[in-house]
Length: 171
Image (tube, rainbow, N blue to C red):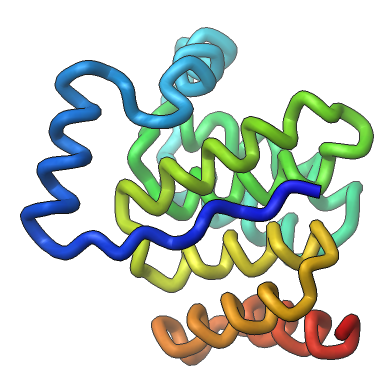
């Protein structure tokens, strides 16, 4: 099982410099994946925020079927806006969920989480994705900790609360 990357701890200008440096050279983690997704969804005129929300709604079912249904809207969202942490994190959870069926997705899941953290690593939705991914990897203690951090950032996030409860049950 792969553990998600540790959350970034960059502050202000230092984080922006890292991101800007990657943008200039197109070396942000997951750049090849983003290119593949843009190729898969070249003429998409959807709204990345709406698509990401639709994907997370399916993920909230926490079933493989939900992950399958979330895959398309989240892939489209990342193709449209590859810097949106919610879309990146959601797609990472989808890929982690489907990793038993498609093992090659597990590496992509880790790369997407890393990219989400670089883009905006301290927001609640990124922590939600990290907590969910960790729970799917049966890292119960870590999932509970990450879910608690998510709840500190987004106290009303019911999915983070559910992840925390499930992680505590699994310990």
